[in-house]
Length: 107
Length: 113
Image 1: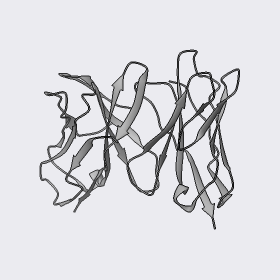
Image 2: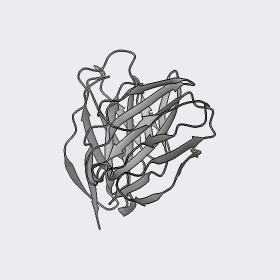
Image 3: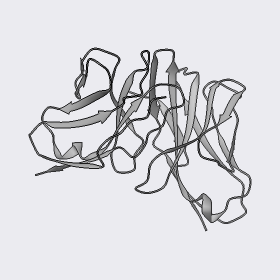
């Protein structure tokens, strides 16, 4: 599984786009990039995943660089309910969640 | 919507008691996982299973044990609870193959007095 690096914390104004970066320079060619978030102490919630192409769903967009060494999760219009810890994970099977990025959405 | 359940949600118990935390999923997933998480800290994988009769220890050493007799059921047992076992325990499952998305249960908060 790839090691990922994320900023410890970020702030975002309510209604603005939140862009959360992740570095996964050791990811191998067949490993997907997954994003999850954990609100308070609930179980983590799946957001989105991708391999090479950019992906979009009802929750977020995922932009993966061409060399696949980094990605950005975009929450297009952040709300207060998006305040959470966001985890970027490279790989599959026995994955490591790490410490993630604590996103604080500010009114 | 993920269908993965954990019971109990909260448990307060005395030192030395045997406890079993239940985890069940109705999605037919082969892979199941147990994580331990202290407040404000990262998740640590303590056990995982890739199918019936398959169990492995995770990255964080744990005194707990698990079993996987049925696909849908992955209980975690502590033979003799201690205060150091106080934590939140999260169960997850995934479908395997390229779909490694993990679906998490609500967690069990354990307090050992």
